[in-house]
Amino acid sequence: MNHGIPVMVADNDARVREALADLVESQPSFELAGLAVDHAQTVSVATQTRPRVLVLDVQMPRGDAATTVRTLRERAPETRVLALSAYADRETVTGILAAGAAGYLVKGAPASEILEAITRAARGQFSMSAELAEVCLKPLRRLPLPHMPAERPVVPIDENACLHLLEQAPCGVLVTGAQDRVELANTQARRMFGYSTTELRGKRLPDLLPEQTGLIEQLLTPGRRTAGLRRDGSEFPVQVGGGRLRGGRARYVVYVMDLSEAGATGDRLRQLVESSPDAMMVVDPEGRIRQVSARAESLFGYSREQLLSLRLETLLPDQPLTVSLRDWSDPRQEPSGHTMELVGRRQDGKQFPADVSVSPLRSTEGVFTVLTVRDITEVQRAQFVLERSLEQLEGTDRDRQALLSHLIHAQEEERKRIAADIHDDTIQVITAVGLRLQQLRKRLTDPKDVQVMDKLDETLKLSLSRLRQLIFDLRPSSLEHGSLATALQTFLDRMRAEIGTHYKFEDHLEQTLPVETMVLVYRTAQEALMNVRKHAQAKMVRVQLLGVEDGCLMRIVDDGVGYDPLEVESRPGHLGLTLIHERAQMAGGWSRVESQPGVGTTVEFWVPLTVSVAEDNSGESALKDAEP
Image (cartoon, rainbow, N blue to C red):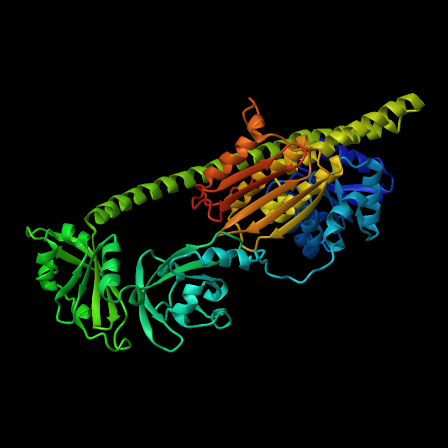
């Protein structure tokens, strides 16, 4: 009777299970304690037989390896679990070891290594190959760095060059930065607000335009009228506009026109009125029209002489326009300007929707009211058409996003199916063949036959290694665990090991990506890096993962041989760059490739964080495992 160490074998592939069983039984010091074909049966048999060592296949149906290990630690604490798997990625290995396994071997390991690991497990010792340990312990070799929020590089302002340009502007110009604080101002702006260069720098925009306390984008609506606040505390009407400057951080340029200075009396007042692209009228406190522009004549259908004899209510009848007729002598009693939608009436009696801007105008003759009137009939019609178009566009965008989501899901499901087929069939068969050949080798006596067998064994090991890498390429476990950065770094590690290209990887993405976005970014980056691997002959590649404008920006820069993008992209059969462009565009993003012969290549692509809102019918993510 054999009283060796009781060993149990659990593997869902019959060929591997029988080969392992024969290997165990071939050793006098071991005793086969039982067999199992899935996780549920493994727990049941191991709980009953209490083997000293359990050789456990990680990928089996009816459960998962980590749960099986934890369950047996509770029900059969004397059993040591030795994991045996085709998967050699960090996440899978560390997950099993964290559950309490006593070792981890990769399928294709020599029979002698398996037998030695069983012996060590029976003694309570740990077993893992040096190569696998290096993969798992690599993060520990990195020096820990304090977590700092990623900051976009600050683009410095060339003040001399900017000031030279700003001084050419016919109005006041302010450049604002963080917290809407003034960074640059031209001479007109300094005179307008009454500050010196030093005093104006650092002022917040609401200090100069006190009514505007909301979003700066709302303030910068072209032609917007509001009130400015001088250093001495007096207010004056201004017209503002501007926009955001392009660059790494939020910076705005604000144009300010002093309406009180530009609109005094006499020729300057008439010049202001006539220069307006909209109908403009100057009204006194009694509601009499004092000045009109040529555009006002054509808008209302009256001659200039007729308009100057009318009161305002003739043109804007039954309108609550009391704000325009108030006494503006104390600017702090009322806001310095309003914009409202009213109804205008032409001489022929026809009415039209009008956008009316109302502002005070101070002069030596007193305080007047300036009205700028614009016929917005076409604007409203265009707005209606635009709203309908936007609704259709949003519907099309949702359809595109849903299509993209289903495409990504279908692709990943197909990759998952192929990876499972490789693991459950090809790798299992090669593993069984390897174990059988190693048993046969022990019976050979001719050195030449042993040499041939050793070469065959090395060929099988190489095949298993490539198949395991193919499984990773088809289905990166890092993505399954929600780590895009780890998946990219694993790919870069392999590229460095295979072709010697060093890399620098920078992860500045703080947002959590949805599954579809993460998969799309990884696959697109993988395509770009494959181009580097095949064609660039690069010594160094820099990969940056950045969060930019509610999206994910991937930048890949290599120092390789470069190429002519126009010549290569027009070449038949060159699909790599086309796939990058199409993936980014389908996701609602963009891509850019910049290269020249001899100077390397830069590939950038950006996709929004929410690539898709659609889910598959089961509600599960594209990478989530299905129960066999």
